[in-house]
Length: 75
Length: 388
Image 1 (cartoon, rainbow over the protein chains, first blue to last red):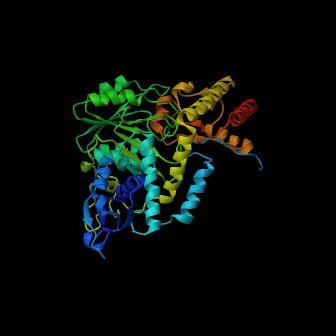
Image 2 (spheres, rainbow over the protein chains, first blue to last red):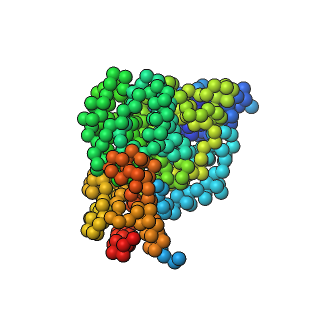
Image 3 (cartoon, helix red, strand yellow):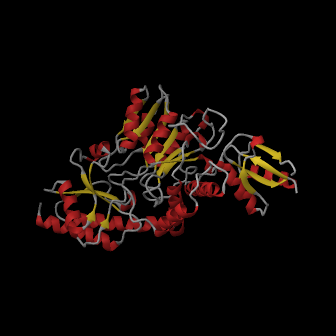
């Protein structure tokens, strides 16, 4: 399954995003930011890429500030 | 001495704390001991969740939609310094009351030397503030009104929401200091028109010392705020400039996550009991204390002498007694712990007429009982009879 990640300006929004997505039963997980997406020492939210639109609109509605969204390369 | 101590100094810090607060802090040290927002591993994320949830609960308590506008810090003093120094600029005018604590007065006196104009509006001897006095003090360059919600000396409640109304009409920010009222009185920043709210975690919120913060309403533009300190935030690490978004703008360095675990549990405790019940109990204790003190010959009770118009803090003196001697004897002979002196609020003591001698202050929390208040009154009665 192709996965994607959402990067946030702050850990506050990463944790809020995880909470909102889990409440909707989405299969998300906080993981360290992969090196090629940024040099932050923080975490990002991994999610199933096919749910991209649903996740994004859910987070926007919940007031979560997002930096960027990327598909993860298939391994 | 095997006297059971009766703690009546809750305006300084609440004691005891609910067991759940202590358990939450111990659990954090055992199980969630990572650095929140700094690393990607599970213990860091777990610590981040604790801080996040504490933030959400603070936002909920004060009626704020966006919890990222809750900035944590050491205490209300730090929050007040951040709100004043972070927003006021030379040429601005700021209005405050004569009942303020030094946490407001000292930063304002320092800002005065930097070209910020300060007006201190006088209050009555009971500590009451007439909102009209605030309206009259407004000038064209007035930027902010900063007021405590209740006096730490005599408990007098100030009319924050009425002043908020005046501030909104004049395009001025209202900065409230809820050090003595958070966790007891309902505060809704939207309804009460409060733009900035300083709170401390270790009093009415039943958290540990070293927790507190500033809640920044959405009429304050954080992009023009100056943080007190800059440093690592775990975010935007590739840049050497401070992030310009909340809460990271104002939260540099590792936070007091174990303290915030305790604060989170304290907020849960308050929510479980309910503000109405907490205020109701404290009001009963306050009424009982004031009435009984007034019946003792030679007592002078300061402030409103009315439980409806004050928080559970009462200052008094006994004729013929130095306040320090009275407080000391209450402790030594009866195990009753009060606070004596000027309570870091010389201006408030000048207002009520007790500067520089000070008063004995009795301050109660939800966890005090009527029996404890009875014993304290009995002790004062005994000492009054004996004489100093």
